[in-house]
Amino acid sequence: MIETDKKAVLLWLSGIGLSSIHPLAEVKTLMQQGFTAELTSVPITGHQSHYYQVMTGRLPECFGFFDTLVQHEYHVEEKLGGRDRPPETLTTLLTSAGWNVSYHEIVPANLESSIHTWTQTASSPSCLLIKCTYAEPLIGDITTDLAQAIRLARSAVGEHGLFALFSEAQPILVKQFVNLNNFLASLGIIDRNGPNHSIDWSNTLAYYMGHGQLHINLLGRDPQGIVKRQQEYDELCNILIEMLPQKLRDPHTDQPVIASVSRKEEFYSGDYLFCAPDLVVTFHPGYIPSPRSTYLDFDETTFLIPPTGATAINGAHPDSINGFFVAAAPAFKRGVRFTASLSLTALAPTLLHALQVKHGMMESSPRPECFDQQYLLAHPLPTTTQTQELSGEEEELIINRLRDLGYI
Figure 1 (tube, rainbow, N blue to C red):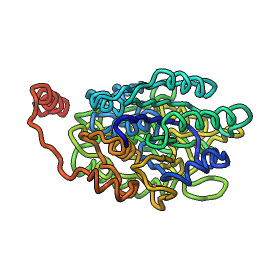
Figure 2: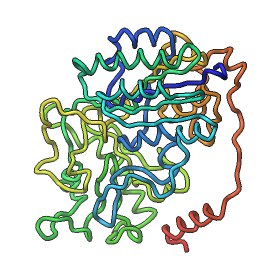
Figure 3: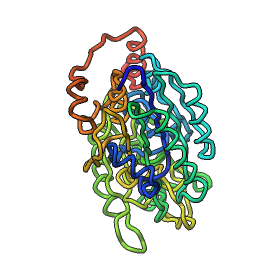
Figure 4: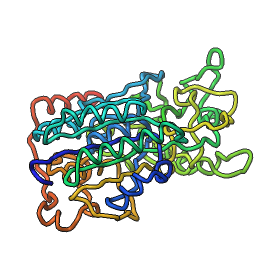
């Protein structure tokens, strides 16, 4: 990228798939001139988790975030942050490197005007990152406005700048909502013999909440826990892992509803593993946890027919809601559509490397498959990871974690 012409426009088109915008001539041209790939997330799927993966290049578990819906004793509340401060974001890293960064979350109708305003004031190096949330299908003026915004943005960055379109996920049609707590109660895993048919925690072994969280009612950790640690805990986990995918079936088709039940260690690691859900439930595509179940509540039945046309992202199977990344810049390959996929956490470091900015401590490295070979020769990918001593604040965090676990 020429030093005197460092400009980038990143359009985050949240909530739509590439197929929705592929008919646009501007998108077809962009794909012919740039690099295209699918973007995949990890369980547990949800808007806030996706946001952190895109903006920080790290899995949210790194700062103690697993789901927006968290347990507070035996109640559920929404908590958008984690237990630690989130790491630096794509925008803060660019700013630290001397870029003038503008980040906006706007409605689609304001997209073109926002880009136009930026073009009047942007000086090099400048980056505009706009997040717009769309609803499918795209119709009428929305499609026209998007096409004009793409033309304006590409003109603004020029042939030496970077232009990218991406979406973290696209919603899928809901086949059925599923309340796993109803099913657990039918098996006797949850006892509903409390007052007003509420949960009797003294006889409840496990419960579901959030967008994929299955918790064991563990003695010594949960307020009214009854499951003993080690052997009893492991046996119950093994039973749920084996039984739920087999037993919970669509009453209309007899097809299994749950793709997998996995121990938390299969997805998560690090200092905050102790506050992760004991088991992670992944539903088959089209099956979504019911709103009541996410708040540790019950419905009239285990399965609920959704309203016509209902869509969802939160709690969906990760492979069913893939996003996309299309970018053109001197750094990227031209006219290449990647046959595999990129993780959401690879997006930030890949963009930063294309802009010649260090990506810092991120979960993924810049993906070499995206880059032109001549660019990689001139700008090799980083190969080493820096190690740092613990600061006083980090030492205090570790002590607090040990205290949470009951060790001190």
